[in-house]
Image (cartoon, rainbow, N blue to C red; front, side, top):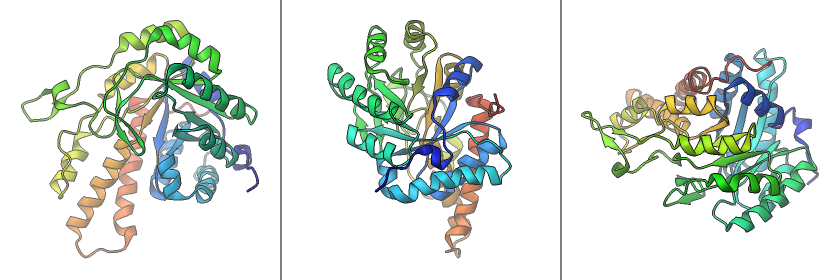
Length: 335
């Protein structure tokens, strides 16, 4: 297959986007998506709130959608934004948790404007070696690279770790300098999936809902002090809204002890050096809650459009609120 540059698809990389976010004290939303409805909602919310946005896919999502279809969906996202009235969309197509040089290369060759190589489970020197290899190939194609130092706990698609290992501030300058990466994902207490913390790590309120421990802002501040205006990324940053958890369980689901990152902590991180915040589980929860509610209340419906439309509407509402109230990216499209 012939190589396709993201520029042909109308996409952008993250370089200017992150520089503006750092200066402006906000974070770029990076929303994972798996299907057309999620993508439509992400783009519509970005246009309505005048926000730059990162469309993010894991390898699992890419395999689910098909790499060729995904490429045209990304191009369609740019054209859709224009159709909705956005003259100059700022949309990134980003690989989340790329596990190998070969996968990152394949994504770059197929129109991705940004890739993440996740070598956090590798020994330190091996992480540097492969990250640098990805960076050299990516930069030759004007594609930006996110790397990771420290390990996030939890499960998300093909990424799993039993426990978190906080990023060591004393390693970050050496790592960033030697790899040449464009942004760095760090571990300060966030984690993947709908259960960000175990019940033992939390306190339980009178209503039975878990209250999570605070993020390690001391580590974030130490890293920021060492790296200056270098872009920091937070993974595993869904807030796991309890209204969606309750709705899913009300209409037949069972997802006990679901707990996320409090939104005020994410807003604080966005005002510091964090330029990109990853949100996946919240989209899954919003969509599932809306679908479950609709099918229980309308048992005769069998056309997917009947239950996917309210799910898409709920996603638009949620993404818009995140852009405005949590990430602070709303209104920054034309900075």
